[in-house]
Every structure is written in C-alpha cells, then in structure tokens.
Image (cartoon, rainbow, N blue to C red; front, side, top):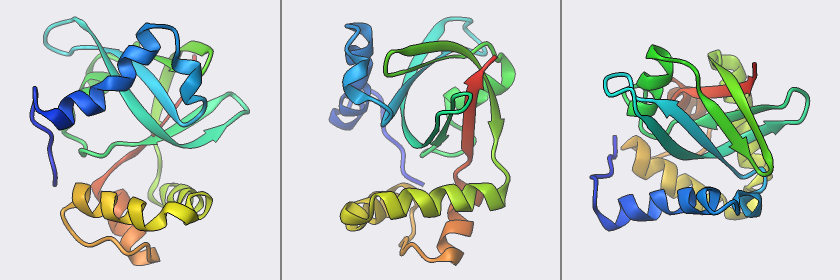
Length: 158
C-alpha cells in the first residue's frame, strides 16, 4: 500500500485544502471534500485531515469517505481511540459520530462513486491502483477486494 512521507511535495499537496478551510473558503470544495478535526490518541492535540467524500447523503446529513491509507492511518486510529470528531462540509460544521460501512454497503457506495465519475474513470482507477498497490480495474471482484483493504467510514451529526 502506498504511503506519503511527511514534508514531501505530495504531503504538502494533500495538506493544501486544509488552508481553504482555515481561511473559511471550504465552501469552494462543496460536497466533494470534508475537513475532519480529531484528537490525537497519544498527544491529545487537535488534528485536521481533509478527505474526499465518496457519497453525500443529505438526510442527516451523512457523509461517506474512503480511507486511502488503510485501517492503520493515524486519523482512523485517533477516531477509534478518542471519538469526539468534528466535520466541516461546505458551510456545515458539526460534532460527528462515525461508523464503518459493512462490505456490501461499501461495495455499493464505490459502484455509485465510479458511475458518477465515469468520465474520469481512468484517472480514478490509476489513483486507486497506486494507493492499493495492485491493478484496480473496477470490477465487482476488485471492489470487494478494495473495501476489505480500505475501510469506508460514514460521519453524521451527533
């Protein structure tokens, strides 16, 4: 599985959208990204991570993200250990609870995500292949393998 080392160009590129939220310009990203604020499990410090939304459900609202770096990502371990996360989507900000999607629901979310983004499907597949460490073709078998490797997590207001 791919990783991004701290203080590299890719790390700064991924961290860039945090500044949009910090400057109150997160609305520019609409329902494509969210800002997750969470508490470090060891340090107790507030941490921020911007994640791509793979499905936005207005009722609730509930937002679903895929964790591109697996269950051992710091932010996933932090929300599991501490809870108390906050989510900002566009102009909405709320204290949130989270849940890990079951495999069948996660596969359906990814199927819909790929259908909505069919015009950029080659780019999506290439990016997922890089993250996963194996060639992702978008088949049902690939989606099942993907959601076993990368958890999909839903956030909704408390």
